[in-house]
Amino acid sequence: MPTSRRPKSYIPRDFCIILVTCQSKIEARKIASSLLKKRLAACVNIMPGVDSRFWWKGNIDRSGEVLLTAKSVRRNFMRIEKAVRRLHSYDVPEIIAIPLIAGSADYLRWIACNVE
Image 1 (cartoon, rainbow, N blue to C red):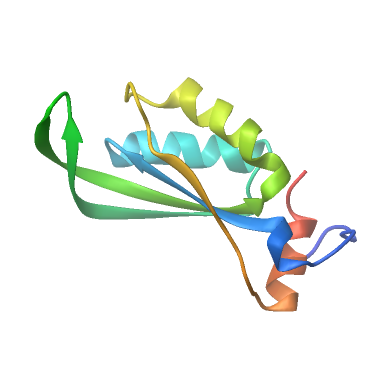
Image 2 (cartoon, rainbow, N blue to C red):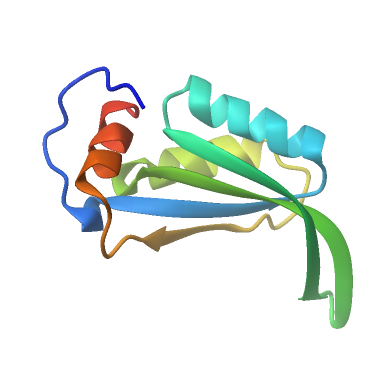
């Protein structure tokens, strides 16, 4: 994976994976493209076929969804959340960040070099 500029640090705690469930592949692709074009994420995986079960309005509901995993830096979370909310169809979209505790130095460097 090519790098475009020099990052300041490669401390794993500075990086995160953001999970977003989407209603459809079309919605997932639109959100992924937006995050990448704005350089909020270095990579976004789109995984269809998620069988979700959840509480909604007092009942257990279920839905077929598409899961996005975006690799980014923690400082971008608020901007990512705003971008996702603008494009997402759900009233309460899942937008959660999982901090990294370890990672390949080369991969962390690549993420850092490819986000704003």
